[in-house]
Length: 232
Ligand SMILES: [Zn+2]
Image 1 (cartoon, rainbow, N blue to C red):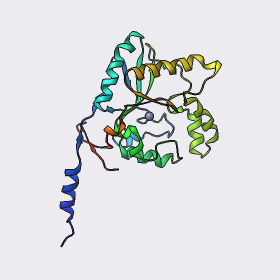
Image 2: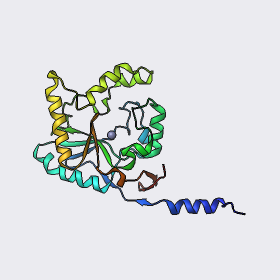
Image 3: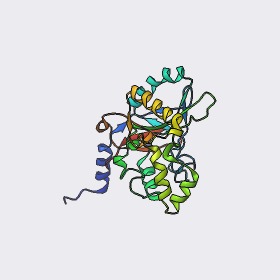
Image 4: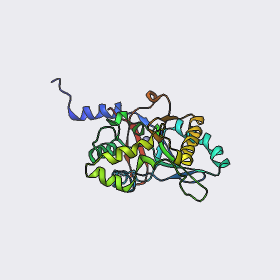
């Protein structure tokens, strides 16, 4: 018989998976971890990261940690903190999110195309010394509860108009403080070695995306998380 038996096939599968080393960033010093999909204040109004077992935990590529460490003295000097609102996204969380908001263009087309699923991207904003968010043209993800409710009801038009404020090309005479903060954040992040995304002021990628594979994970009861490559 030429057919592989199931046990052998499974063995082969585990041999093909390669373990990946990610680092966890915790709140403290100039960093604040507040993963927006761990709670319900996001465009889905649901806590997908909590549902899949990740919760409010921030895992990133070691190369991304190096970039964030470059930022540390700059943030300290300006008396600012970096709030990380999204980082590594498990592919199963991605799949759930696509089910809730299937509209093309809102999330990447598939997990393979989302840098978050490669742990090579972060969504961030800036906080002042008291922990208050600096004004930006819109919130991270352009989130506002009223838009989330409209999107859930299938009404996209108003939110699409609001989404324009997420772009670097958006400027307004009445929002010069907001756009100055946006441009300051971009400067800081680019000087630290990260790449901006033209249509999302809060999103930053590591360069050389092809270096970082799609990553799946397994959660253990003691809090340990194992990461490994996943075939798209
Ligand atoms: Zn992002």
